[in-house]
Amino acid sequence: MKRKFRALLTFLRPYQEEISFYWANYDGNIEWGYGRSNKRELPENILILASEIGEYFDNQIEDVFDGCYSESDYYRIEMIVNSVKKTATIKMEAEIYISQAETYERKLEDPELEDYFKTTGVEIIEARYSGGGDSGDIDSIIVDGEDSNITWHSDSDDDKLIWNTLYDNLENAYGGWEIDDGSAGTIELNNNLEIVISHEWNMKVMEDCDGSFEITMDMLEDE
Image 1 (cartoon, rainbow, N blue to C red):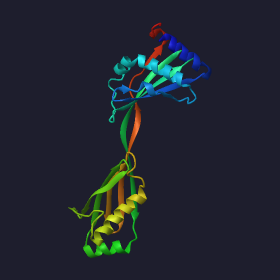
Image 2: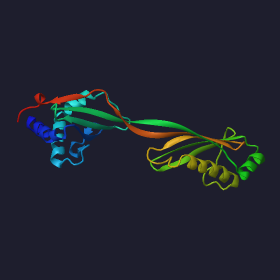
Image 3: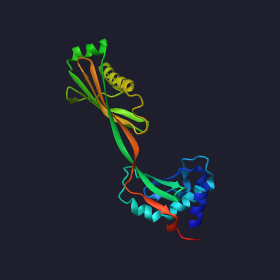
């Protein structure tokens, strides 16, 4: 293994900079056979060399990053090779979920909607929505504090008016809210035709795990 590490350092020496190699790690299973690098022009045999060196330290990786947690069980191993110092540092990142809150407010101008509120005496309409993976919907609609049966396929003209108003404004305010990691939130519409959407984008990001360890020539066995 020492010979392979020396060969890797020798090949990377002309770059005069740190080169990173990456591997996916799904729930503790590192995909060493599918390495990649931040230097796209590196030949396949160099990626294989880096993978073999990383795999050599499989047990140490498991021990060092034992406390790292990913909500999706997805991690990323990074090996940073410094050919000048003749070292390689292994780090790990974990995928976590975060949310980003936003608010949309607007005064609507809609005679039909204004007539609805005057005729029915309704004061406030509240809705909840959620989506992800390219699919989403308004989950519930509450009218003056009472659950309603308003859905996208309601027959009532009033129900259709409310549904379309809520959904269209959500689309206008946060187009793509149901794509990928999706989002969730609430919509409030009052009898002054004021609409407020409290929105939260769902996102997956990579977070550094605590710890790292450095590989040197002395740590590797002669072949």
